[in-house]
Image (tube, rainbow, N blue to C red; front, side):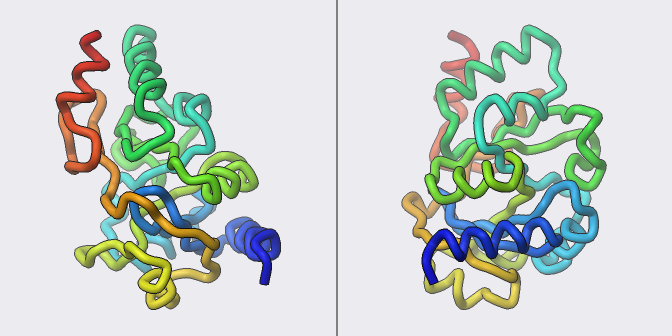
Length: 199
């Protein structure tokens, strides 16, 4: 089956509330339509993840990522500087969410946004309207899938898998923008983030 057929199948799967396995530059991901509540409920159930924990919203571009953040103008500017330096890339920024995001995407009013640096997934995000709810492809507390073979072994977690490979094999850094702290260590350090914010 060629790539465009697989991508079309994956697109139809997302549109109909299904789950898709996606390659990113960090680790393999599990993704669904963030605005479809039943898809999101299944996403959390499959992973065995607590729905009150914010998940990532993968975005097709910096501009789309910035649209999800509800920040005062000076902080919006700092967020833009972070995006210009590290996005697309292995950085998830947890920000106060705009009110148009449903509670199940932004529990407690916060959302983690990331633009993956992976051509297959960026193209797929654009096809899906710019946003996908995502998390690593694994059951909670288990290590994330780091190879196509491992992703295939986890096929009971998703409906369709996109073609591709990952490059870094390390989950993204998760940075809480308002608390100014790292929630998950990753390829980008706190010092690198602070250097941009304090410039």
